[in-house]
Length: 341
Image 1 (cartoon, helix red, strand yellow):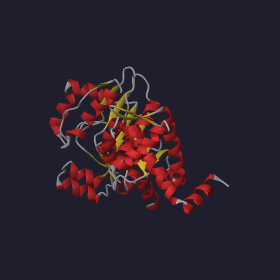
Image 2 (image 1 turned 180 degrees about the vertical axis):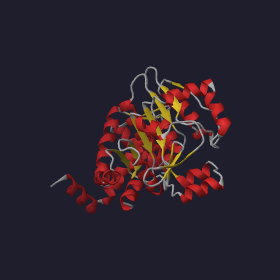
Image 3 (image 1 turned 30 degrees about the vertical axis):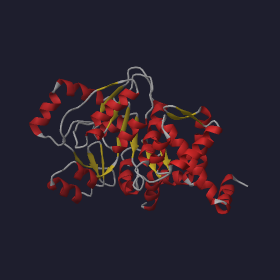
Image 4 (image 1 turned 180 degrees about the horizontal axis):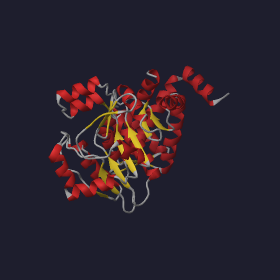
């Protein structure tokens, strides 16, 4: 009997077993992400009762999967191995292997990471996307690399999910200028956070969105901004989020005239300050300094992080710009992508 047949049989006979496995996996995974972490904080993080968390973590301690220290719980090396094994098992249980194959076919891309869940119904799932993207980054990072980051919740999750890594001469810079309303999600702030995790340096671009004409040219001529822009031409890695065009236009407060233009032009996606139609054609570019589409196509590693079924169309449009990007998404977005083909 093949593994898939065994899984289907057990799901029919003892579905509660898989619920238990998934709950324990989530507990162990969250300890790993946020270690050291206390039981009360973990219970709040998982929306579980503190008594349940105490019972489960005591069992994990007995099995040497975690250590319970004064500053909080941490995962042992044996526990890390179990996390990886459970991840593979749950991937099969949830049918994510076949979902991955189908999603790759629809998007016509080779590099795809799908995580279970839905960021729209459970915003904490975004943290898992961030950790997955950060783990991928760690596998490709080398000394002397220049990393570009955009703003937004998805890219912030990557910076938060990155663990400390000691590399030499790493530089992190914003991929575009712009100062939004939420300082925490600005590219400048994210660049600083990520650089600190990577023991690297960072540069900032201080300027508002949608400046035009002489003001924009004057800003570009500023020696500090000019130096940063030159570095943007030599990015090794870009981490960016993908948004629906209408959502980002509203968030950035675009004038009604520009919003109507985007609507008439059938813009469906936004990434690094550009608005795209369903075929990946540029409809409009925000008047700000930063990378352009041709620059984007030349970057060796482009990592897109986006989840949620509502972003399916935007993700599809973005994948048409370059086929070798690395997409980190969730189960709900993948299913919506397949359904909308």
